Length: 322
Image (cartoon, rainbow, N blue to C red; front, side, top):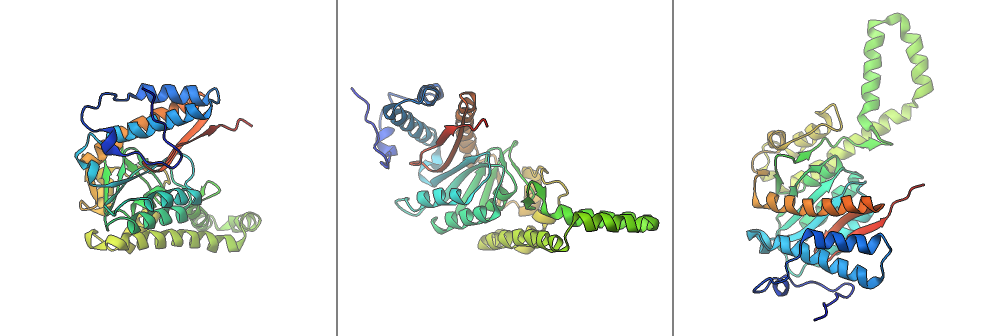
């Protein structure tokens, strides 16, 4: 019997797929094989439709094994590149497509990106939930992705999960680094008064005064974003939203600092940080599947990311080798 191909925009009904006997359970290998056959050789549209059908069915196959399968509307943000405004568009298209309001669970894997995008995504997920928005972090949610987590009622973490400081970056450098550098130079001048002219000339040639104020305002805006998101569920926080926001921006000296589950609990409290939960186990299994696809995509010189809901399509495109 020929397989039913899904048309563009058509939803997959989990109950129909997993009713009764589950005779045709899909394996990760099946999805990987279709991915390689489709994108390595620029396969035709029928191959792409077949791959997308298997991809979506496999996601539902994973979710169907867990008791929480009917509890949530699921969204996914799996992207190791920069979080952008267009990512908020993808999440919006997914959350507005939910049939009914439920708690929203986001499975999040991200190195960070534009703080404004993270803020919008957090607000969207709360707005289109029933008032409960949870995040599961199977591996990393750094920088702006940690800012996104500030919107969550619960953050589900495991032994390999990590958040990070939300101090903003400008051209790959920390916004707070300029202020810290000037403070360090000031200390050196205090210790070596005879070198003050040399340091003054260095600063005059290296830094425009307006930059100092701009970089500080960027950091303050990160605090505002975090405080606004934390305020949506402040009754469950161990400290005020402002205290937590300041801690996430200013406390850690290294932008790459690992805030693991125990460190995160010190900041956000046990009511927010949940460990070894079914939400985490589900997110870990989905992460392993998506990470496998990402690795094989890289093998055939393609990039892979997946942002949206169950009925969204993963983005797979040729790498730019220039």
